[in-house]
Image (cartoon, rainbow, N blue to C red; front, side, top):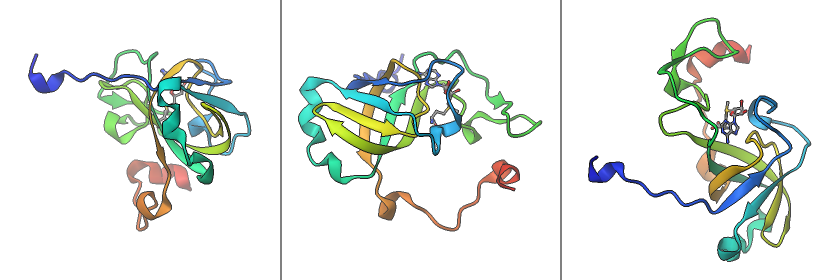
Length: 149
Ligand SMILES: C[S@@+](CC[C@H](N)C(=O)[O-])C[C@H]1O[C@@H](n2cnc3c(N)ncnc32)[C@H](O)[C@@H]1O
């Protein structure tokens, strides 16, 4: 194994979600169910000031991911597409990303909406969603353009 292949990822918390495998809504968008993002006590100080943000980005480990295929069939097309043009949870490095609505904070617990991670998902990082950084214009969405219509 090469030195650059050795990465140590240490969870900063765990996602408590109303969803179990096979039940999650697509990208969680617009769903009103509340999930709880537990940040371990030793990292809780890092949540200082987070209440001022309406949306946050969660980065997590898709711990129940099983293998992967580089060409993937999705519900959105009859043709397979390259894995890295999809949000399939089955990936060589199964990182998940969700932009969620922050509803409330109770100490080290963040109550959020729009989750699509299953219960027990290890949380790797939290970042603020900042439109001036994250919102882009002149977007093309490749083969997913079909789904938009
Ligand atoms: C399409 S993926 C998108 C995940 C994330 N929003 C993203 O874009 O990276 C959503 C699927 O991942 C699955 N999933 C959620 N949490 C998971 C976990 N911890 N391990 C494996 N699969 C998970 C859900 O069941 C759902 O079918």
